[in-house]
Each structure stands twice: as C-alpha cells, then as structure tokens.
Length: 294
Ligand code: NDP
Image (tube, rainbow, N blue to C red; front, side, top):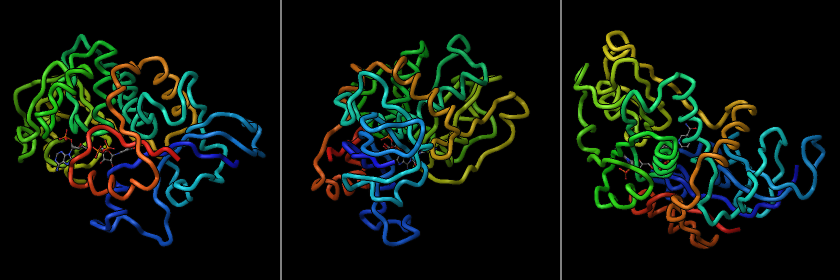
C-alpha cells in the first residue's frame, strides 16, 4: 500500500525520542511517528483501492517514515477512517490514543462490569488516552473520577464528562494491599504505584484496564485485590491488537465518542513545530493531543 499521509500525531514517546531525554530509540536511522491518517494512492492489497481513506496506528510504523508525506505499509495494518471524520480531524486526532482508550473500555465491557456497579476511575486524565477514556466512559453512562496532576484543568476534564477530580498525588505513593473501595472500574495509563493504588481501591468484582506506564513500568502492589475482592487486571495493547478488534474499536469510536466534547482536545501544528511540541510534551505543558498537519 502506498498512502499519502495527511495527518499524524506527536505523543510522549515521540517527545522522548526527539529530545533524546530517554533512550527509547533502539535503531537508527529512525523517523518518529506512531500513527497516521491519509488516502491510499496505490494498492496491491485486495481490501484497499486508491482513494480509500485510512488510519494506521501501531505496528512499529515509527520505523517507517510516517512523518514524511508518503508511507509504504502492509495493507493488513490499516483500518478505514470512520465516515464523517477527516484525516486532520478537526475533532481531534483520533489515532492511537483513541484506539487505546476504546480498547480499554471494550476490555471492561467484555469483563462484564457496568456503570451500575459504581464509578470508573481514569488516571493520567489530562493526557491523550485519559482524555478520550473520560469522554467515552461518560458517554456510556459511567460516573467518571479523573485523577490528574493538573487539578487546574478541572474544567477541561469536567467538560469531557468527569464527575469528580482527584489529585494524582493521592495515588502516587506506595499502596496498601487493600484500601477503601472507591470505584468499580478504571482505565489506567500511569502504571507503577498509581496502578497498585487503583487496584487496592477497586470494589469487589471490579476490573481495571491497564494501558500505560507514565509513572513507571513496575507494579509494586499486592495480590490481595485479586484474591480477596475478585478484582481483574486487564491488559490493553493497541500496537499488535488483532485486526477484528481494531475494526470493532474504530466502529465504536465512530458511534460512541462525542466529537463535540473532544473539540478542545487537539492542537493542530505544522511540521516545523514538531520539535517544540516534543519539548512541551516531556515538560508536561501539553494537554490532550497534538495533531500534525502534513
Ligand atoms: P500523555 O503524555 O498524553 O499522557 C500521560 C499522562 O500521564 C499525563 O498527561 C499525566 O496526566 C500522567 N502522568 C505523566 N507522568 C506521570 C507521573 N510521573 N505520575 C503520574 N501520572 C503521570 O500520554 P498518552 O495518553 O498518549 O499515553 C499514556 C500512556 O499510555 C503512556 O505510557 C503511553 O506509552 C501508553 N500508551 C499505550 C498504548 C497501548 O497500546 N497500550 C498506546 C498509546 C499509549 P495528568 O497531567 O492528568 O496528571
């Protein structure tokens, strides 16, 4: 497949790669960029023809030059751009973070946990995955508790649908094996002590979908929530997720995500602004997502 790229996004890992702050680049040369939306210009794949609007996220696309205007990729990696969305997406760069948040919500649903069981917590709430998760869960009827280090962003998070805001410092320290039950479900993009605390505060029979490591890759917790409260920890990966799951996730995004709520989520920048955006991301100065118009 050859795809003319119309938009891509800059995420935290791009920030680390572009600033060189952490050794996330394992192979040089590398052109960063983990997702794109665009139009097929040539295809030898039976699913696609020239003119099709497509989205790609994951599949190690960062190894290919997705920051250039064209990419040659495996057609199995692509999903159709949902009807009504543009590649640049004035509603807000619905790429990998959208898919990740949706896959997390679908994992909770598959587990059978529902809004009737209690609230849902979202950590890393002002981040890309967190913001989309809030909008999705609120739209599906959950009472959402948003955990953020940017309490000043409370109005933004409430606008997305959060009912309550908590300071992420409450969840940042070492967790007790079991703590007071506060929520029935959760989407965690933070990991480490935060995830351990989230699990320890999950109600009997609840479930937490883990999809990120913003605080750390460790999980310094106890098995107590699993064996004494039947809590489930559900892993979410958008990079290698099966095609059927991705297609379902994008269908659900088209159906369940309130585009209006997310209008403020994205900032669109030009190609020349990528480096500055990368610095802003690692310095915690970016809210929501950064869409790059190609
Ligand atoms: P963002 O940088 O947009 O958001 C991360 C958020 O985490 C921040 O906005 C902040 O939220 C919070 N955070 C950052 N540092 C810390 C810390 N030290 N302690 C506690 N909270 C912190 O990233 P994304 O939303 O794009 O991605 C979130 C995570 O999910 C990343 O780890 C990313 O690698 C992972 N990811 C996983 C995917 C998968 O397939 N499983 C796909 C996409 C991303 P706040 O300001 O509200 O406190």
